[in-house]
Image 1 (cartoon, rainbow, N blue to C red):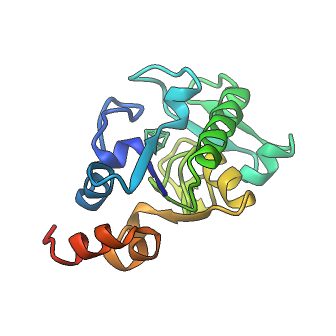
Image 2: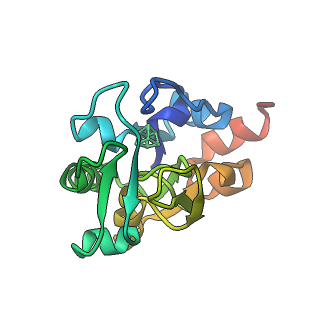
Amino acid sequence: MILISSCLAGYKVRYDGSAATNKLAVWLVTHGQAITMCPEIMAGFDIPRLSAEIVGGTAREVLAGQATVKEIDGNNVTDKYIFGAALVLKIANENHVSAAFLKDGSPSCGNCRVYDGTFKGKKVSGKGITAEVLAKNSIKTFSDTELSVANVMPYLDDEAKRNLRSTIL
Ligand code: SF4
């Protein structure tokens, strides 16, 4: 089973109330090949909500208690981000998830790049908290920029493979 960030599947759950709809993500969910999760909503954040960034280190350092996640007003939301990631991991394991396609840039879902903690719109290499937790637990993580037919094929059942090959997205 594949895990996909809810916003990629069309759900308007981003901090500003928008979605980041990706046609292949929607296809995977509607064909029973993927489940969706939003760690921030699962942690109890509202829509809309304040933007947040990892401050003072990497996701790995957040998990080690050496860095934090803060909202733009300075509020420390580290515990909620870790809680959301733990819930995602629990459900991923219960659903035998082996690969996750995650919205890049997010302090939760970012897989290749995240904002640098200055709230000035600058990105750096790194993972969000949920992506880090999934990767640490042997789930293969991809960013949405890697959401391609070639990358999802190994995780589909045989019927879905046939269907996807004959589908023009
Ligand atoms: S936490 Fe992940 S799933 Fe939720 S809106 Fe942000 S990028 Fe999308």
